[in-house]
Image (cartoon, rainbow, N blue to C red; front, side, top):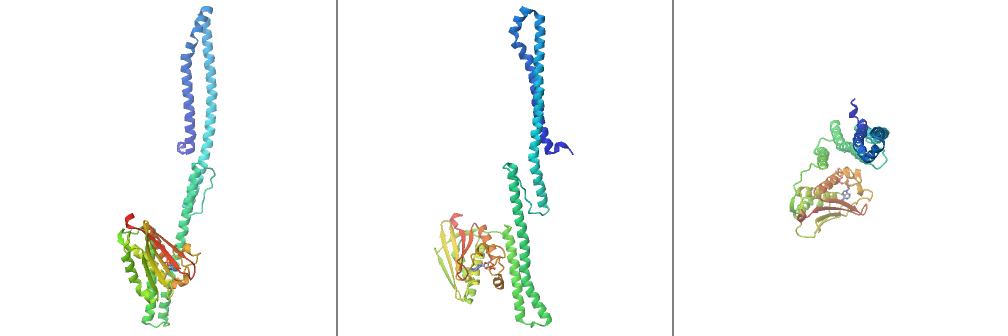
Length: 375
Ligand code: ADP
């Protein structure tokens, strides 16, 4: 292998080039300077000596003096050169060891991560640039590990969610074939329910993947929130009446112009109010308030329903999380509605949060969106 391609030899080589160039220049300069300056410096004394001892004696003394001087300087230079070479070699070897060891560790760890060992970490002490590289590398490895864990969990969750309606449909079909279920509208209606649940799940999953990949297309614009809210409530009215619920709306202003995507805003509100209806028993009350504050409008959806336990609150925006999975799955919940809603709110520069005083004490969801004037 070409040695110059190896970092180690490039560092050693460049140190040696510096030392050799330094020594060569010093040698050359010394030679020139001795020849030029020494005779001139002792010229006056030489004249005196020539008069006293004759030119030949002076010539001899002069040659001897110059040779001795030159030899001394060259010997010192030789020692200096050897010392510099030695020091240069040792420091460059130490330096290469200090750089190459961590580098080869980083190379080895990245190879292991590429092979799928996401728990791989580098242990480097110190605070130099290489330690910073190692810290960043470890953070990247941690992020990759989390992504991998989420991917595995997602596959598990999706297959689990798909299994429920599929098992239902399979059961009905087996029952029909074995003659256990009557071949009538009611059986088909039950099967249709399962198929609808499956379709809803697939649609939700598609929206989720789009919104998480940032591929959702937003049509941002300025519009009045109040008529949109009224339209959503009218749309949900049959469900509200069927469940014997009371809905109250309180708006701080008659017109609230916001800057958002009207369809996506409606999607979030349908999810929030839909959940409030789903998780509030008969006779309950849902209060929707639209309040403007500084540059945003806050839309709060309060219900007097089953509430959310404090330990579940931090997780309700996570994919597939349900407080009571058996209960909510029965009611058709996929556990990804809030995940999508929060992502949509973020995409529109808004926020979505939740609060609850605990089980049986109702829940509140707060959606903020930018007011039109701030756009
Ligand atoms: P789902 O389709 O299951 O309702 P969401 O993502 O919309 O999915 O909600 C996640 C979970 O949060 C629900 O399963 C439920 O346990 C809880 N939740 C959401 N809204 C409410 C609410 N208004 N009251 C009580 N629990 C709620």
